[in-house]
Length: 591
Image 1 (tube, one colour):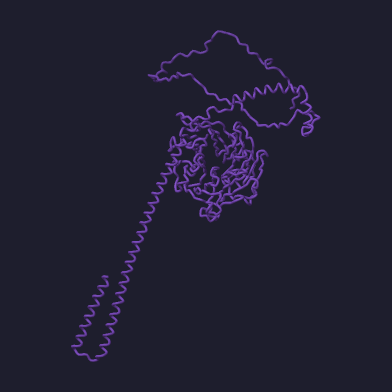
Image 2 (cartoon, rainbow, N blue to C red):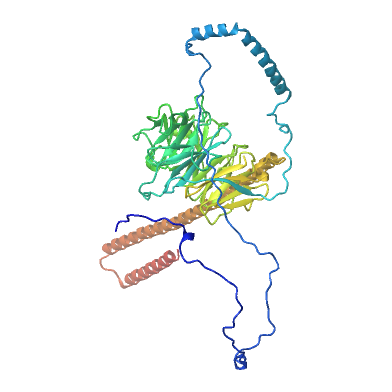
């Protein structure tokens, strides 16, 4: 039914009004006590009653209004010119300036503004607002505060389908920004509709990424160019190398061709020290390390196969997982492999034997992190399987220090840029461990669960957490460099002594094994000599027997009718010969 007309009326203007009035109390029912019912109950005596003396409190939660920030740019152009003057024409601007400079008002304005500017300049020369007053003093001893860390910001993957944060890279200019690569590393298990985008975050705005990087394949690694902060290098899941220039937008500026790229995902990319700042190299589990120039990414400039047999056979190569390059050692770089071996390489080598210098076998699984100590480059950190190990280039057979075996698998690690004795490791269960081996070596100084002085951690759920560690873990202690250097040298000497001892033991075991082989050879030679003597005796007696039998036949043929006495003499000779044969057989058996 269609409503034709609607009547509008206040609620107070319709309905029966409630009128209340006072009256005397009335007794409706009166129930007397029944003593029989009391017999059904048992008296409780004594009675315990708890009383809370503290004030009652309640907890309430309130979600404050979110403060959103946006970054906007303004393009300033030269202004203040009259409409009839074109600022791009040099002659017109010069003519107009000469005309204005002849004006008396212009001279008076310059005189007034000049005195103000002179005062500001003198004030600036007298007081330097950017001066660091305590920069030259020695670092003070750190107070005995407990190591701690607090969460500053959390940067979440804005996509609905969450992906793992596979790599983080700090902005080279003051760490104001953080580039995060997002990808799904589960082989052939990426969900349908998963985004390929990675992001650059501003440290002060965790609500929205500053720039979205849009590659053709998910990024596994992403690195800022240390010479040009607008340029980033990325390694893709399909093996390609991509390059971005943030001044040109979110799209890829340069991309390597499929034919000359890696055959497996690119797990490591790193910038090289060069004059142009455009050289880099990449590593993949296909067993190849490639050199690139981002100005021409159509094909690599050089190629190295990770074959430790130095035959450059791809089927024998080791898959590369991590890379390390130190600018103070421009000819050296290191590669961490899937097989747990760290390979030290020489960039200037011309042959495979010269390019692959040495190997460090140390882990039972892939080497996920590889980094030199920023204060002592000959010592480097590796993270793999269930441990983190510290190595020295002087000791190649074993590491000089290592952590205990953890219950969870280790996923990454890095040195502290301000303290030579502090490094960080992450585990598969979401724990961040901070190690200070000047403080203690058996256990981490601080462990944080799921959560300079700023540390960024990426998680499998795509969450990037920014942590601020305590003052004690981010400030250089007095004599810490000397202490760390002495610890490295002491552990290196200890490993060298142990290596020499193991070498001596192996030589002794080898000598014992060779001695046993000689004894066996002598025994075999003695057995062979006895057999030769036995054979010679057999041949000698065979010759004698054949000669005796021949003589007997000759004697019998000469005497056709022998006498009785002759027959007896012949029988005696035969008996003597038989006895001689038996004695010789006994001697042979005894021999």
